[in-house]
Image (cartoon, rainbow, N blue to C red):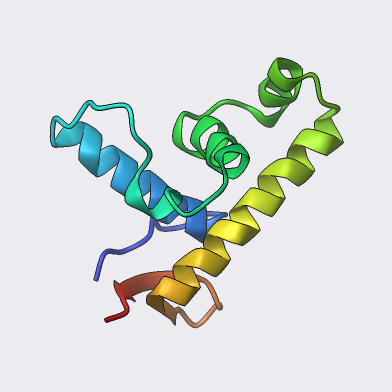
Length: 108
């Protein structure tokens, strides 16, 4: 079972980040999103890629897109919520005692 990052604030985004970092270390440099993001809309993929995978601040993301900071934060939260729903639908998710996602296994 692939573990999520310990202490991650956004477990769904952490899963995407783990796939992204593993691909970078593995030498796959093609410009394509991690498979777990492929089912999301382009807007959701961009939000998660910029802020959760590349580490762009939400303030910089808001400025880049011409949005207010609260608007950008809402956009990212909605994308994370949809990613989490997609992951829990396609994977068996295990929670730790604090209710945080600790590991997952793809559903058959």
